[in-house]
Length: 149
Figure 1 (cartoon, rainbow, N blue to C red):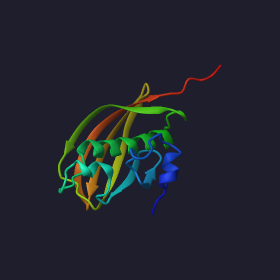
Figure 2: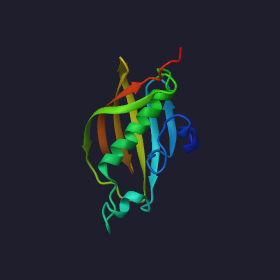
Figure 3: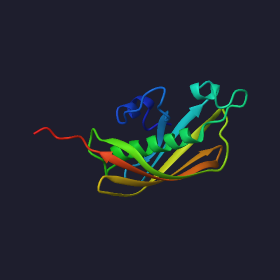
Figure 4: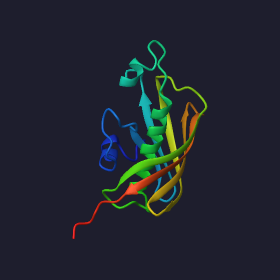
């Protein structure tokens, strides 16, 4: 059951179709952790080229899905980046361990580590059918909006 729907997510992060990779948020501890879900059925635009006849979710899009989930956490958590901030992925140490093939649901878990001087540090993992497919240490930078004085 969704805590935040796709429409709720769009109220928080700037990503839009065809480049939004979270369908809903199903768990959210406003202090430390978030879990999102991305459903794929094989008709998504990227499968026509990756790979014809053998669709495999591109690894960089798994990383993007984790980063977007982390972005939602950073903007909505109790530690919150200022409203209107843009978050940029600045660093990742990522490991892919299994292929993701449609149809499936990808569970995207991000755990907050720390924040300092506008940088957010998170640990993330993606899983399908209870099996980890990707893990990453992610750093993002929050560009805060300029205040008008």
